[in-house]
Length: 318
Image (cartoon, rainbow, N blue to C red; front, top):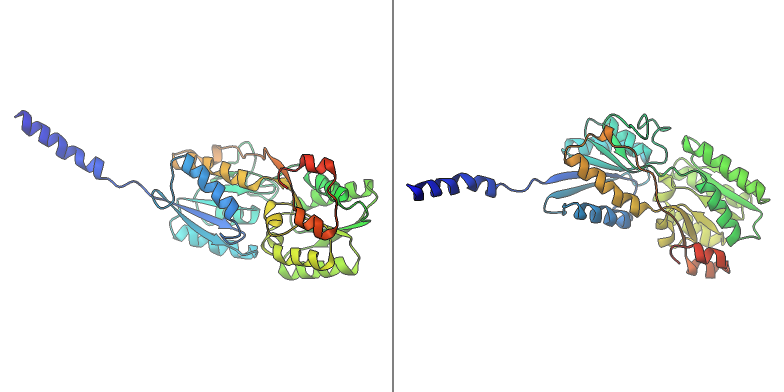
């Protein structure tokens, strides 16, 4: 009788042990290809791994890129919903809006310039709905880009600023750039960039209006077309201050801004909490904790720029 009971207990326990581990589908709605975004993707997967998720074992990454064309986000977001994504990770406000509007799938913003101004969430502390994540909004970051650019190229008297003036965050950024440039005795040429064609026109205008240097922000269009900008800068020997390390890794001069890989690493913790049952709307939007200066020595050498010692000390990576 005892043997029979033991055998019965083993048989009853078998299904629990035989149950396969659940595999979660993580949709990623991105601006650029996975290869161009590998540093951020690597950091996200590291964060997921530390939380107990391994790609190919209990998570599948369904990666979709708009390739610098934000108008594609709604279609791509709908594809992820139809593919039954358990959660969608986004980059930028346009991607977050598209994912939010595509259905009720939880959305984690790995980055978003100003999700409140963009209408993605109602409040940073209490986002509500099914969207949460991180914002890249940091006051005065555009100020520092202009100052660092001036230190790298003090002989320059005019700078061109590439901004998407249709973006609500560009208004404050424009004011910061113009105010800082004026204090440094610099003329500012505002160049409106909303798509790839607009980028080409802006670069042509920069040459025609004799901009001595450029300041680039983190708009989807400029990020996806960074090779075009970097090749342009080489051709005309223009110092350019960028917003993210991807530009410098592609050959750009220097970048100052938030540490995007670290934001993606932090985004993994949001994904973990939601998969474990947390309500996205109850999770406060996180803010950047790291700002980095990165300088490309090869680019400075090619332009004949001597890096000031103060910048060498400040730089996270040379």
